[in-house]
Length: 481
Image 1 (cartoon, rainbow, N blue to C red):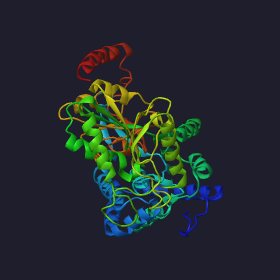
Image 2: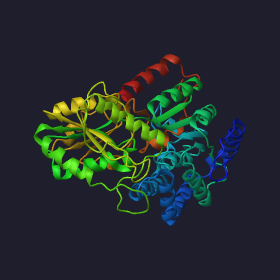
Image 3: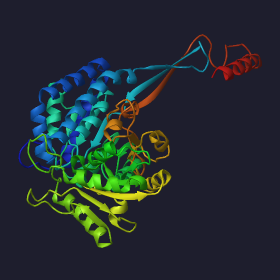
Image 4: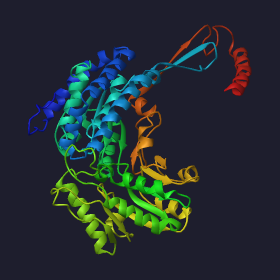
């Protein structure tokens, strides 16, 4: 079931969601029986179709989100590369695996990844092309059906994804899209799914985790972040400054892995602050198809209000705005100037809560160890960035973060598709990417076949005699396990 693409989208009713799941469940077994390579070929064709529709898709992403062209292109390339990775590497991960049996030569043991059934995928508005594809594609390759609920602010790109997947050969009805606010539709999806993948706030993640726990179904989530960037004592400022600007203001800061806190070693403080503020003030804000624009608008008046309130709260309690801190009404009502603050302290909302906007706070530290300690002083642990000539790996090993990028902001860890991506602490459960990002949509089934001699011993052999043989065998197996 999909809602017709018009200027307004109807909220899916409970009956329509029931119908979506019923159709998905009816089609899923035949899809699961389809050879893996054939499923992978559908994804390969989808990636090619995405490439063929580049301009159309970039326009659609920009129209729905207000992000600039370069940020839309980041989504576009990610979808192509991740889908291609899944199509290429996924079949090997999902193939049956031989495991050592209970008794070598006599026990044949095979591990089979079995699809879970119908996966519920709930995605946010900030990356409406990347996230539905990132979560749906591996679930589909693993033999599942998917019921996708995209955010109400960005439904059109998800509907276009469905059209291109079906054009690539995905069986009609295997991917269902249900539209509507999360509070009205999300719970209904969760109540019917066999596994849930969610991206959104930590508060909502807790609610969904409880719902999944009550049903004893699996749950994976990427949740909030208050991501730190560390400029260590041996950092190269000519690289750290532009890198920090990009990491903080890409997609107008509306990015789960973007930077909101920057800790700068005292040796670099004055030079970094001056260079960083100067670079931020050179950012080009605007709307339209111009590739040279750096920062677009915020997604909604609600999100703008969050940003304004956090900055006002900080300033009212003594923080200082070095640049920005205002709505750019000359560009439109949802444009907020890239903002840099100092003096943000405990008790200010901005200090610990996720902002999800073009706002970053700078903190001076006296040592690299202090930077690490303060970076870890957070309920979140999604992404971190370290700038250093030689101490990046040392720092990364001490940071409580699911991903750490050395001498970059966030893109290398996200784009390393063979490695898992996800959060520690209150930033999420489970992982995207890597083997886990595919296998989480399966249940492992172990199949054993006993040959020649049963585990209990040959008929009429005698229990004591068999026990002596097994005792000797146990000693041998202990050494080779």
